[in-house]
Image 1 (cartoon, rainbow, N blue to C red):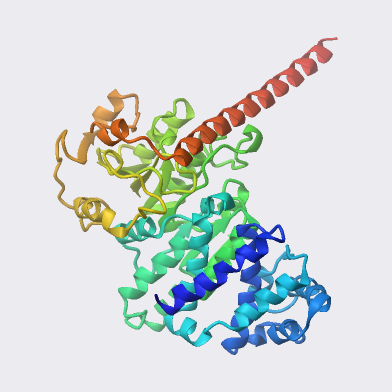
Image 2: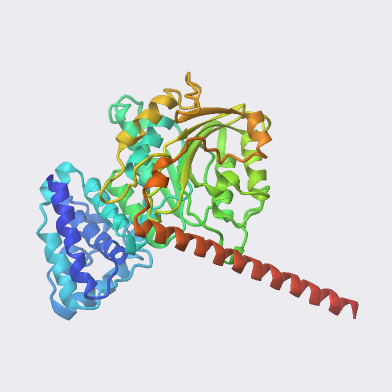
Length: 483
């Protein structure tokens, strides 16, 4: 066991104490974020970012109710004063702790960590470990912000982000894609030393941008970026609103947008979307291919419904294949996300230099059929993507030589004409999934599928109800005008 793994285990073990105080897993990680930031600033000599009187020793030396009262005041103070980074992390911060003994246990535990080893192995790795542990706790619901790292690393390796390129994630969550892209670029530039001074400045201060809607996830993302030494522009906002138009056009977009519909069936407040829809994934897909520069490339995680939904879904897929070269789709295994029944894919595409006829063929890799059920007992690893990465090839634009493996293989080629004959339905499967016939999913997977179906049905009913109310109001207005 590495020192980082040991530290993560010790910190996570404290969550059982906090559960007695009514603290959820997600609240616990947020609470740790505040305290670890303060302790880290003390350990690394960076306390000049913090205002005098509101530093680690100021909270750690107090006891009992005085400590908890001061801590509450401290969070509010740090959201207003200190460096811009401090204010961003502590913006609207408040503690969920109610008992002084719980705060004392956290402070003493953090004080007792092996911070020398944590710095040697990377503070970012420690924090990433906490986020991953949080994501695997099904009751926390935090997995919606956490894409499996093996999947992120595979997507980044295939997209091959380069120094000098803007990299964007419009649904950044805890910042995993931006961090992995930075790690990839540093590994291929001798930790940026192969670059000129101007190029280094761009990579350190300008290259990465993103947006996150949920304040707590945004806070965790800021902390994660900071601990991985990534200075990116991670904004708090809704990419499906006019705020999304502020994100600069990108050379590379890597993202896993949230699933579901806009609350109440509402539409994104973007006037640059050709096809209004309450489906968040379809709306994000429009943002992504419109947000790419000509020649820019994207890899995006999307659920199956994006591949087959009619009406606006079909129009958006057609527009995507016109404006971009949608060259590759991988059908992902089930059970790798927080909601285990959700079936997902990764779409890889390149923005064309014209707006017509860019997709000539689509290659589909089936990594779902006849695959094991993934979960805690069988974790997803990077090795599971090795065959797909080899089939994809070395060209990030999907132009490397490829081989159609036929009806018994996992990698198939479909022409644009074949897809058009399917009414632009991209939900294409050809392998007989014997595992689905012989092995029932685990009970929590079945329960997740039922909950997803009920949630979708409820959202659609809410959207229909809103639409009927709107129509009724419009009818009353017409009737009144006629009178």
